[in-house]
Amino acid sequence: MTRTSLPKEHDFDPWNGCLDAQCAWKNFGGLSLEEAHARFRENPIYYQEDFMFMGGVAFAYYFPVIESYLLETPPAAEHPGDDREAWILAHCINQQFSGQDFAPVLPLKSRVLELANFVRREIARFSDDANEQRRIINAWQELEAQLRSVRG
Image (cartoon, rainbow, N blue to C red; front, side):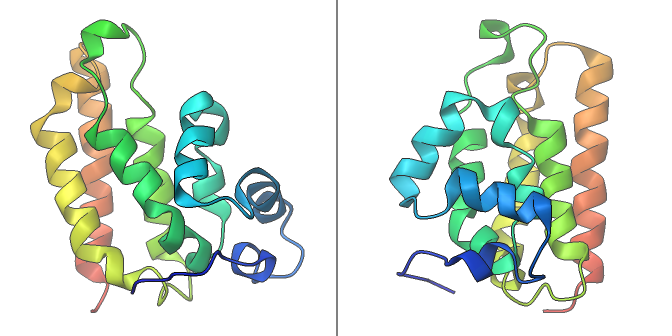
């Protein structure tokens, strides 16, 4: 699914009143992918949960922000003690595939699986602590299991 137009407010909050989805709209609504990349990189720890709560259409549009952020993350040694949001982002993505209406994100399934493989293969980028690495790997394995249970 390639979407050329920016997601609308309803794409962020298809439930009509979800405060977390409205927060995601406030933070990312109306932003191009380039602008969303810049916004997210300003403060990833602040913006990461927006991806958990935005509606599927908005998530599908802005998924490249997560994808490029993780693929381009510098080695953990440059940021000791910071997991680069790898753990929570796995949960954010998992939430998108766990809802009742995940049709808008279904076309992302293969890309998410590739990203999960990357995170697991390159775990040293995300943490230099063995316990934190295991925690991150477990989150991505849970996501992979969820994706395998989704038809399509």
